[in-house]
Length: 170
Image (cartoon, rainbow, N blue to C red):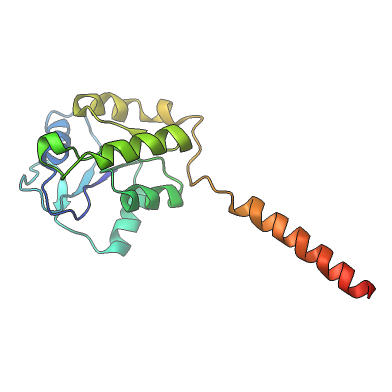
């Protein structure tokens, strides 16, 4: 199953919703596609969809999905990372009146470059290839969020342990 979310921004993201529906219509994608269309005005004919899903249902869909496709909002692609999925991120773009500026494009590019745990697709015509070759693309990528928390916690524990040893000596 492929799960797609366009978030809750009030501008439509018809470009992504319609593209996914066409892939399903033309049988390029055989598996089920579930789309959260938000404020998009295009209503899919070949995919299961809802304007919004309750958060627990979205988590369930992300957990069950083979592929998760999101817009470029951080909350939408961080949640799949936390669940261990490598999302395909299709940022909303100002030129298509999908957002007020191109901050999603710039942010998604920066995350992809630094963290190397998302696949960014700016040109929608490339999305089909990314989906069809998803397994090859993600092999070698690490899902999840890269964080310094574990290293920080280990160092903090070491400092606290040392302080406790010094205290006992007194």
